[in-house]
Length: 120
Image 1: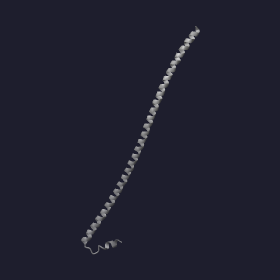
Image 2: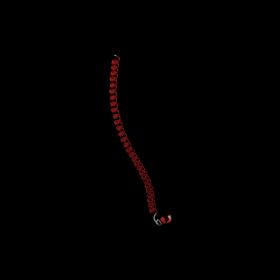
Image 3: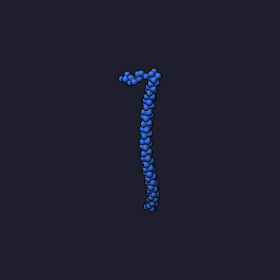
Image 4: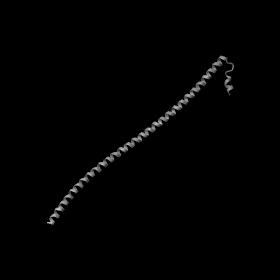
């Protein structure tokens, strides 16, 4: 097949053949350069896709962390409210205990007085 490709060159002068050879050499060189650039382009596109995927993954992770943070903040608020309620309940119960303790002391004193009166 290559002989058929070369057939058209028959009868051309040496100078013209030399110029054709230079042009063919340039074409081969440009083809190789084009292949290298195509390979570089494909490599860069693959790297870009990898970076895009990484950015997307980090965005998703950021969104997940944001939701988790929001959930934890809500949990903290809920726990703080529960703590305040328990603290209030404790104060109420301490107040009741103090009141009942006072009543108990008062009743003990009254019992002591009554016992004293009974002894008389």
